[in-house]
Each structure stands twice: as structure tokens, then as C-alpha cells.
Length: 337
Image (cartoon, rainbow, N blue to C red; front, side, top):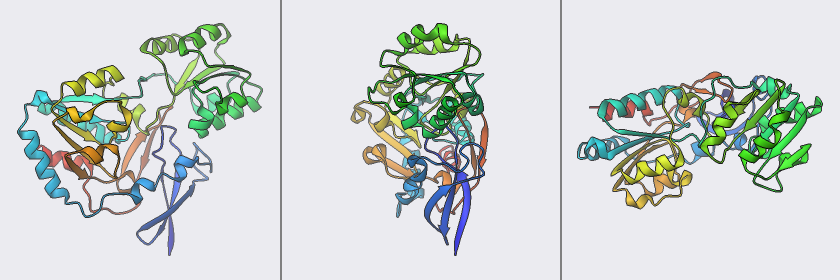
């Protein structure tokens, strides 16, 4: 008997709803959640494929032994040599627990937010769709299609679209009135005079920290779009580090404890320089392939939790399937013993 259960897409920070199709206890597919207010029955390819991580989850791994081995390694290190890495893949509840765990034990903490930052007053998706002018930094029609859909709606409502991308063949350029492949700073300087209260700047990257200061000083609303589902939520709990700061952290780390992130994929760094890597992950990734200890944990499909989407709305989700693996909060409780 097939069953449909609702959950959130974990592929980026937009916060789309998806329906998961179950055949008994087996997940067999997804399709869009038509009544979800964010995506209203649309999902991008990443959303449709979001269950791939569940289908490649760890099997036949003794989580109790992995936790015990991790605890022994942590106890053998000086606290100042241990760095804890969390990410926007972690739920609000997990980020809070990770922060408390690191601070109470005197460990270093690293959190990377795509070199972006938290903006308190961001545009809503409806404000983006209703904007008179939209300034797009990044190929959002291709990389974040459900945000791209709002940009298309704005265009259909006679908004003028200004687009910046590093890619000369960016999909967003196809609907833009003006295009650029310059730096973010040059783009903002060039069009600052065009921006007014009806404008929205939507972006998924910057070139430098100074670009964020420039964006914060604009007279219009902005909307940063993150690559991970709860980066916005994490930024309200823990300070982020830049790429350079993360590399410096790695350089001074002997034991790296990674919570549900793929740092090997995110950073161009020689992680073999770190003596021990312990990672908590729900499925195989580049970091688990080189880790000394892998602790299998629940995926978002197997637990209750919450993410905060790009426009700052906290979205709750509930477990879709059962799992024998512990959750991150449970593992932290064991590591604190």
C-alpha cells in the first residue's frame, strides 16, 4: 500500500515542500507538494532527487562502537586541538546542541555560510515577485529555480531585471534587461542609482566581505539564498567564518569533528594534514570517504526538526520513516559522558 507523507526539501534554503512516496517502510519516490505556500506544486531537479541521500545511507555500521571510538579519541586530545564543524544541513535544534557541546567542552567551532551573512530585514518571496526592479547576483534561474520562478513572475509583471553571473551563458541572462559578468562590487556600483524602495537584490554569492557591507547599505531589500536548508537559522545561533577563517581553523586542528557536512567538497584544502577526522553523516560523501571514524546518524527524513528558510520563516517537519540510527542530539549526549 502506497502512502504519501509531507516534508521539506533539504537541497537549499528556499524551503520548498515535497511529498515522499512510501511503499510500506520503503521510500520509492517524491513529487511536489501542491498546497505548500513556498513552491505551490513545483520542485526543481534537486528537490525531486533529494531522497538520494536516504537511498545511499549507511548500512551495517555499528553506531555504538563508532561513538565509543570517537569518545576515546576526543578524550585523548587537548580541547584546544579539537574543532567542531556544523553547517546549514543541521536543524535548528541540532545547531543549538552542537554549540552548547562545543562551548561547554572548550572546543573550537567552525560554521561556514557560503561567505554570506545574516540580514535581519530580508525580502519575502512575494516581495521579490512583486518588485519593480530585480537585481540578480548568481544564475538563480538555474541554481535556485523556485526563486527563479519568482524572478520570472516579476518579469511578467513588467519588472526590469538586472543580472550578474560569472557564467556568460547564464540561464538568468535569457530574461534579463541588462546583464553583466563583472565583479559584484562593480555591478552594485554601476546600478546603485537604479535601486529604489520597489527594488529587490537577490543573490547566492559574493566576491568579498566588502560586498556584504555594500549590500547592507542599499536603500532596497535584499534576499540572500543559501546552498543549505538551515543556514539562515544557524546564522541566528552561531557566528559564521569566512573561507580564509575556516582554512586557518583547519590548520590549527588535530581532531576535526564534523556534524552532517561535507567539508572535503566545500573547501580546497588538504585534509590529510589533520590527524583525526570524525564525521557524523546520514550518507556517504567525500568527507566520510577519508574520515577515521564515521558515525551514522538520522537523515532529515527520519526525525522531527525545523529549518529556517531564506526569508526567515521557521518551518517544522516530522519524521517520514523510522531509523535505527541515532540523531545528532543523541550522539552529543553520548559524547558528553
